[in-house]
Image (tube, rainbow, N blue to C red; front, side, top):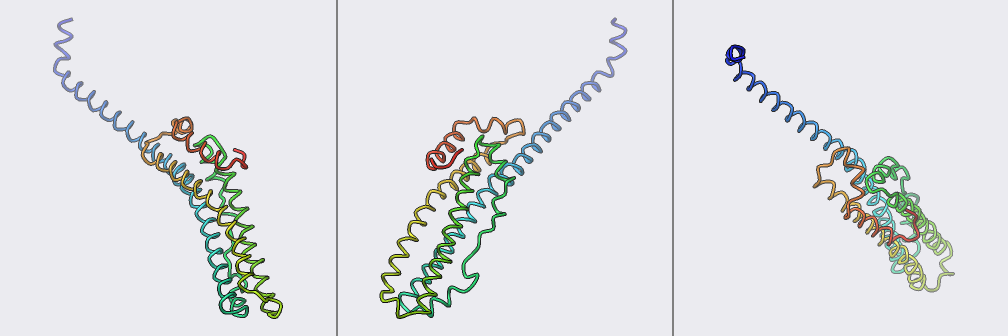
Amino acid sequence: MMLEIEKIAPFIPALGAIGVAVLAYWLGLRAYQKQKEHELVRTRYLEGGVDRMAANFEYALSTLRQNEAHALQVLKVFRDIGPHEAAELCQPHSFARLDSGRMEITASHRVQELVGSQIFWNVLELLFAEAESANFFYEKDIGSVVRYAHSKPDNIQDPKGVFDTITSKAAKWDDKAVRYYHALSALLAIATMLEVQHLRLNDVRGFRSRTEVQRVVKSIEERFPDVRS
């Protein structure tokens, strides 16, 4: 036995060095794999999911705000200057149109995987529907009033009264938009959670169980009781 140990003794330092090298390689490979998985989760669920869905909320809300601002400009010109000048602002394509392709089902599905609820998808659907209705009101209803006043100015005796009536209706659309900003804020809060946590693929399913995630989802469900989650 002693003879055998004496035979391998010169190789022990080399074997130890190889063991250390193998261990270092294994640890490095494991760290690399974890980093690659984290990058995959970030690309798929943050950039391709939460961030894209938040961008779609912003897109719909900015289109709504853009059309609201243009409609108010039209009405102010109608009230202060006249129907002819206001009609010039109601030409075809004066108002922005919503692109329904911006709803992006894939991004919404990834958000649903993360939070365990389709509340954000349903809220986004409602936002696009209400934004379309608001845009129709701004473009068609206000435009028709202005064009009618332009063609038959004698029939419009009180431009200020018309302005006040229509702006009061527009204010209702403005009030409706407020709660969608809360949904956008909730998505951004979820994005922040993903940014600070190095999740791997196996961690994605458990993300929905976190207290702070459940709290965010519940807050949106309570703010949108008319939307099924």
